[in-house]
Image (cartoon, rainbow, N blue to C red; front, side, top):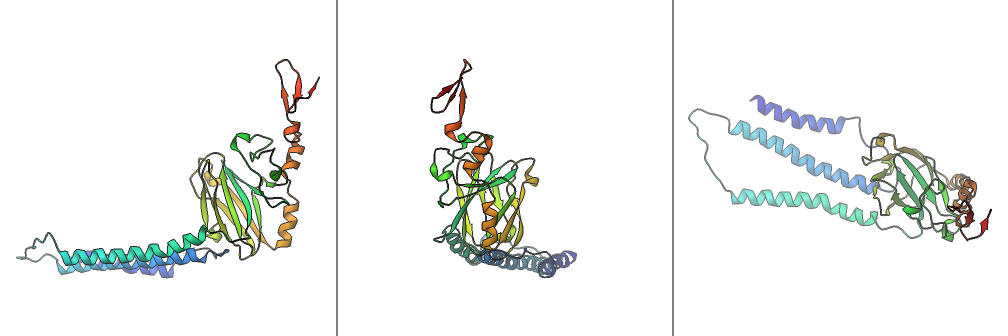
Amino acid sequence: MAVVFMLILVAVGTLAFHFLSPWWWTPIASNWGYIDDTILITFWVTGVVFIAIMLFMAYCVWRYRYKEGKRAAYEPENTKLELWLTGLTTVGVVVMLTPGLFVWNQFVTVPEGAAEFEVVGQQWQWSFRFPGKDGVLGTSDIRKISDENPFGLNPDDPNGKDDVLVEGDELHLPLDQPVKVLLRSIDVLHDFYVPQFRAKMDLVPGQVTYFWFTPIRTGTFDILCFELCGVGHYAMRGKVVVEEESAFKAWLQKQPTFAESLAKAGTGGRDGLKLVLSEGEAVTAQGESAR
């Protein structure tokens, strides 16, 4: 009978740990409370099934324990039992998955008027890009990445000249404004995740993925890479500061634009790039030569 008591103890201990444990989610800081709700539904369904199985096993061990002179009856099929198990399993799966489908539909449907910014991941740091005064992000190409152009922006695209570049690990966002997050990786698979925002998404090389959220409380939160991306994965961290719009705009104005970064690097954009010929003659990208 020791096995019966052990099975019951596991069931009771599981319930006690769940309801009395001091460890729980961090307080939410975005509009995605729906994600918490879907996880709670999964907890309830799987929890009920787990407790039911443990108690059923305890009952079977006790009910069909060894008794001298008793023999087990071989019953290879039980249609009624199989129908019950199939029906209950179907109901449980539907209850778990259906809410997630509705949440996913909201997750990929960006509200009109949402602002945009880009997250660029690489081993092992984060970079960020905001549209400039024109409100449009310029195009990018991984083949254009260089020391002077770490974002790989197209210097011929006028929409990108005023893009605001943030190469540090600190991101600022305005409070109560929906934002669409464009995600781009320039090397391997990464994942942009802020636990308090709940929402997250992979950065897939060669693709631009996205999600959206609305920050609902001010504060400073950790940015994590939630996808194993190499030996420095543990150190790929950052900070996101949610603040009032006026403070956000003041911070944004202090960040350099793409044009300013090119000028500071001494390239001046495509027109200022210099090519060195084999004879030692330097020419500009427009073909003008100078000795």
